[in-house]
Image (cartoon, rainbow, N blue to C red):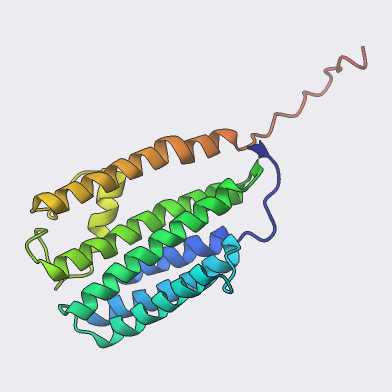
Length: 223
């Protein structure tokens, strides 16, 4: 990658704002918060399609849009501990993983590294955290013994997911069953590799402004 101005069609900043809003809403310990977060994810799909260049006319994109809509409706209608809620959570996980891949493809398509490129990479990193939170919620809905907390407290899962992703260390929330523990290890490894290699490399390629020449110092051409 080289260095230059951002693609004017990129709106990675908007994606990052929507992801942040979804994360903040998910921290509200109310039943409606999970439903609202699902509809925010639906908005995220629309913005992501426009940002990453995924055309809604494509069969895969149409299927993803349909899954997002169905997951939002199912989340609004189903009880938090029902099979419908679990299906909605797994659908949200699949949806966000698709958006991570689409976003990374858009970032890697840049011939140059700009501030939008770095914001896009950070947005993809945050999407990974949100995606795994839905996966953990779905797992806990199916089997409440997977974690030390269960689906009755859905607001705990985004916090737990980002603790794992950033590897800051477990607090009062830990995986209990071996399968859940292995998934948390996978997320932690993904988070470390993503930050230490991909994002770090993009930041290293971002241009630094050189200091202006001091006054009174002639250039080589003037000598």
